[in-house]
Image 1 (cartoon, rainbow, N blue to C red):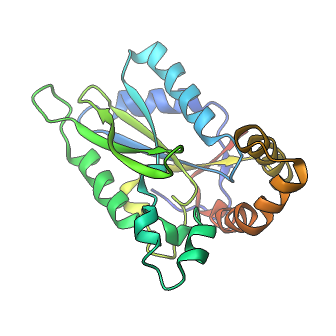
Image 2 (image 1 turned 120 degrees about the vertical axis):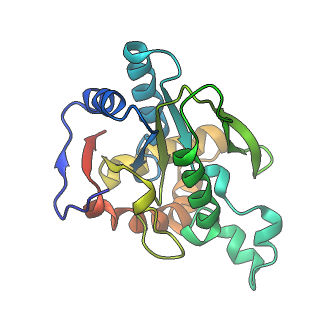
Length: 225
């Protein structure tokens, strides 16, 4: 992954992904997709995977998320201030970036033929509020992985995944738009009023968004949202 002080706008992301699939036939490619909370990372990753798979073959691209690497509630309860740790869940230091790095290395090292073992990936159970191991299986047919997450460009709190991502893209949605979407999501998912949703965002999500924005200049490409 290269570092560009002023990343350019990627005009045709699907064409870029198809090119990577066709050029890297001997190994799996991993592309990161970073964006503010509420920017639409998951939606874009799934859409791009569907569009590439429609042209390159089903299962060629797999979209994954980093939410499965949240620290468990039990782990956060052992922090010096458990209440503060739980209140700030979603901050960079409430994840396990070392475990994510190990799994990314495994994705790279696993072969692309049918005799190689598949790689499992954790998911996140929102009803329980904890990761779920082995939630997704990345089979040998998956030549490219799209990994979406907040902190793939972060460089503190144990985060430094540069060598494990072939490229990292930044979903370029403005702070105002992202937080408007996040407010609507909190209202729909948690049944909050607009005032309650905005108050929740102010003490956690907005703080995380400010951290994510600092990594924008490290991206290889900007992608329109």
